[in-house]
Length: 250
Image 1 (tube, helix red, strand yellow):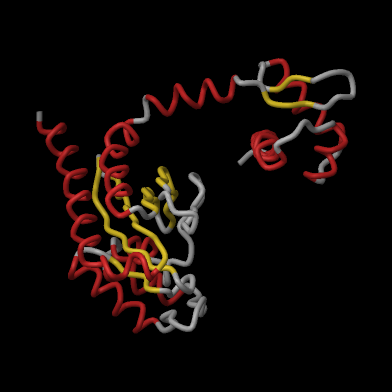
Image 2 (cartoon, rainbow, N blue to C red):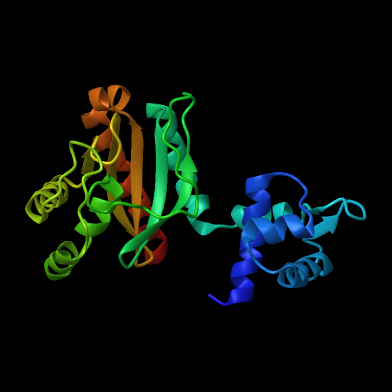
């Protein structure tokens, strides 16, 4: 990523994090970059209508142009248009977090996140990556999508730290969990990445890309309905894959 693009994104993420007007010196200090560089980025954003100055020395803040653009983009996102109704219904049925991520190589990026009504919930920011591939159900789903040679190479090269007392930390144990997931069509993480949290994931293919759907929640809430949730998860993944196949076949 070029430096200027990276800094521009840093600016926008900083405003989202701070949630207040920021002066030139504030931005320079918080991002640890020279004032002159901050000035150049602010000028460019201001000239394009993305930020405005509240008053002389009153600090800068983003305009609503970002929101307007984001809404226009989201409304025409083909993934969101097709997946949202099914994933939202899945969330409503189990009242636990439902996530959609897309696999790219050995990483997967969260594209959609639907949170439950409960205050005790699992949060994953859209745009963040699936982490701890050996211990999370989403990570195991990603690993399970690899062919056997690629899976063996990946497991041999990646660290397998213990995140909780329940984490599988040997190649054999992780491989066993992946093979079990492949056989039943869904992958389980029962308190292996975070104590007290259970997640299940399954994959589907959409326009030659692989996606992961995950249901995540506190173990006392999700485990008693695990088989029901797994069946519903597989049904949703099947419907999503079928919708795409049907459209391609027309």
